[in-house]
Amino acid sequence: MTKFLLRFNRINAGIALVSPTDLQMLLRSIRPTTPSGADLLLDLRDLLMSRGHAGKCVKCFFGLLGDLGQPGALVPLRHWLEKHVEIEVRADGKRLETLPVQLGRSADLHAYCEEVIRRLREDRAYTQQRLDLRFRFRESAEAGALGSGA
Image 1: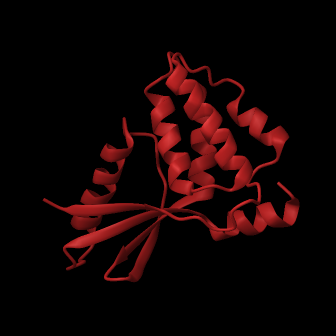
Image 2 (image 1 turned 30 degrees about the horizontal axis):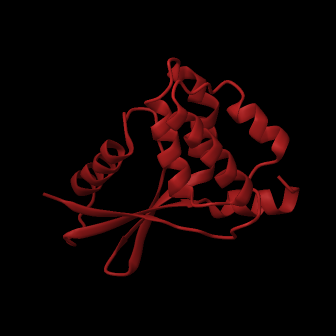
């Protein structure tokens, strides 16, 4: 069985990734059906406004996916995450590559990470037994957010 470690990477904490107006547009159609879903939505809003962990944002996305009567409401958020978040693949303390985030097919975070690991094992020739996956905000997205005030 393949081992993987999911780490959350915190870079430039405290600087919003998205403007309040854009955030409202991303989250306006999301209507959780449970109190825990409402908590996830509030956590996600806080994470995006405070430049929290990219991995925690993805975790909130999958938590909301299981809590909505209309999962299609997450499409704008999914597109935003896919544009601004990437996966850093590391082994033995070294960065091997970065991958785009593609959230469209998995039902939960664990299944998504297992799919990424499976693809890495099938498509790459890495010999390491352990690969670490780290969600992080794309550097270009960080530069754009910092430069535009968004």
